[in-house]
Amino acid sequence: MGIRKYILQDWNANLANPTKGKYIVVLFRIAQLIVKSKLTKILFFWYLLFYRVFIEWFMCVELNWKTSIGSGFQLWHASGVVIHPDTVIGENCSVRQCTTIGIKQDFSASGIIKAPVIGDAVDIGCNTVIIGDIVIGKGVTIGAGSVVVKSIPAGVIAAGNPARILRSI
Image 1 (cartoon, rainbow, N blue to C red):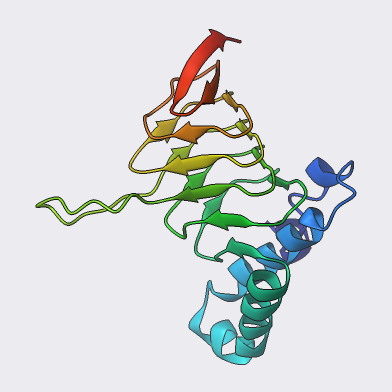
Image 2: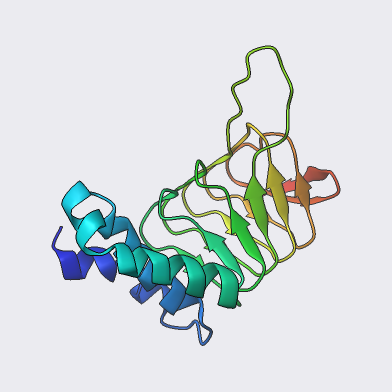
């Protein structure tokens, strides 16, 4: 995949997105490209610093360049979004404002803490919390204001606190 194509891999998915989300995603892809090599990290450290300050401090979106996100990612009304760096997000997923995707503080004997794995084509509503070592299946829709602490199978609509399956799609 060429550099331009890599950076703009989410652009078509965000054409209808009038908000700053599509620009944040482009800046995220540039940062991901830079950290792929030690040389580019050194040459473009200033960009990574800019990204960290501008996106996290001014735009209020914590989207670390280490986060694994498939193509076609949509970030609607980007504000108050926190996504843990170890999170894995599939292709064609959308995330809305005030959403947190992260780890659960677990003081288990193993000491291994894992972030959520989100399948392809998942639609995450605003003000949603997805936390812990869970898997969300392909094609899931998560309603606004949900708190997801358990894995969700593919092809369902889930909502609530804690989130429960409402119906199959």
